[in-house]
Length: 158
Length: 81
Image (cartoon, rainbow over all chains, first blue to last red; front, side):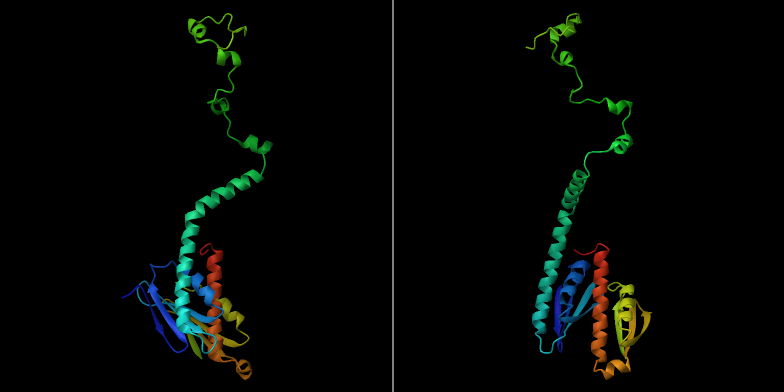
């Protein structure tokens, strides 16, 4: 059996397809688009098959065209859902960052609530807290264990 | 009387209840459940039929309304885009 089939009736069309082919939200989305033009009914037609019946509200409407349009809409809705799913994480990240930025710098309460302990408070991986003398002292002198004039600050940076 | 059957996996029970309430001025409805489906037996009120409202159209509109609400509820719950 084909994945999708349709049967024309008198002023109505019945479309059947495999449930695994399109997510339920896509079926709902497509049905919602037709709700103003047609009476739409959803049902199960056996195991894992969905049946959509479209009955035109206006007499003499082209139901075959409705069937084709519904299938196109279904495909469009499924594709849109996939894009949303793929970009969900990115949208969440951007929104979180935007909200975080809008909140401004942390207040006193937030600072107090931060987990700053003995070990984390003085972590300095970039060496920013290091003194100028410590950072630029000559290696030879440091190794010699002198330091008598190193602390005076009279060294020249090479 | 027209019998409408709504599959439980595809229609929201609360949406059907709401649809029945919305059309209560035009029709009386009898609700029940049968084999995984919500069954609604719709009978147009004499006032409605005297105004020229067709019972089939009324039932179809009620079913459409129930589907619309089901979809809106699913979207509100975070289902569809």
